[in-house]
Length: 205
Image 1 (tube, rainbow, N blue to C red):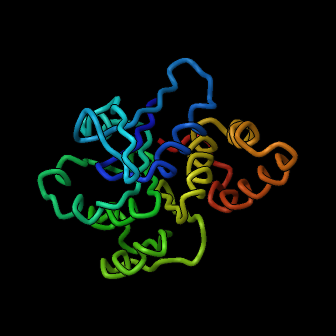
Image 2: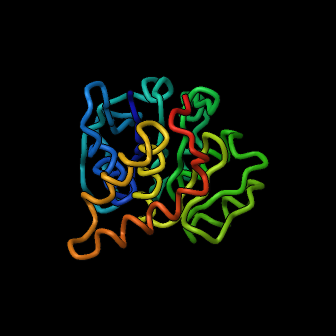
């Protein structure tokens, strides 16, 4: 099982790396979580440099993909050659978008008729792309989910885990990262956000 987190130049560390950390709480042979990028090295909006572990082509073949957010997302969607490399397909993949990553899914035509979540800065751009933006942290329809706000990235990761490995695995992952003394409350809040969109489904792809 391969989960790719699309991460572009100028990325938001919280959006990509929180999801990376939560998803990696699944300790199972064959479970792989990769930062995927057009280049080998990418620099965050705050100057952090990391190395990608997967190409955009590999991401397009992954079982699940999260499109991360960043300060240069409008440049990403304006790059027709780059966008052409993103062969994402909700009929065979779970697709998630974090904050401005929602704009990428919108520009790929994957959110037609689907309301979405995003951050407040990106909201007008997503609306200009013809998408109804919800005033909430998480929403999913079928195999597509979107999250708004950096710390909502844990909800997106939990949704993917729940869909691929079950609710118990998602609760366990959230429990591990939750603040001490607040673990039960944190897990309950996280699951409350994603539960309406699970429909008792475990495997989606």
